[in-house]
Length: 200
Image (tube, rainbow, N blue to C red; front, top):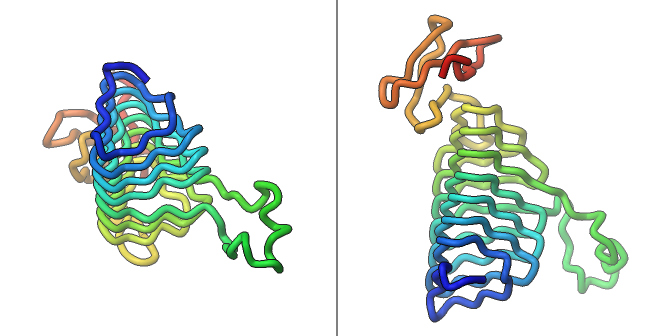
């Protein structure tokens, strides 16, 4: 860790694998063996477990726990109080009948949130899913399966409700070729899915 990392005096940070420009705020706890990239913002009361991986330019709002096996790629936004999981059949490792299960990491189910994606406040992400690049998970959605790149998903369980641009605005794929009204990026539609035009 360098002087170019800000750690609030009440935060407990036990890893030195933090990129420059990152800010870690009040009452956060980061365990050893967590990797955090550059220019990240980790809000109050966040917990990052050993084995969690956070890319560059990631924002993790207040009240989040990022567990072992969760990877947040570059530019991901995690809204307040999002819930991640990493075990599909959890038991207490202290329960005698379950102790053998936890003697190795065979129980661990990894989750990946790909570049530029957004997870809205209080979304729930079940273990083992991949959330595609620039996808948008609405507040309160329960993600039980993979989410396609640029897809907007809502509800419980989360279902596709449209498409979003890299900038986060909704885009309409109706005519096969479209331009984002907010940022101007141009997309082509292939098999019903937007793809950034190669010219951009």
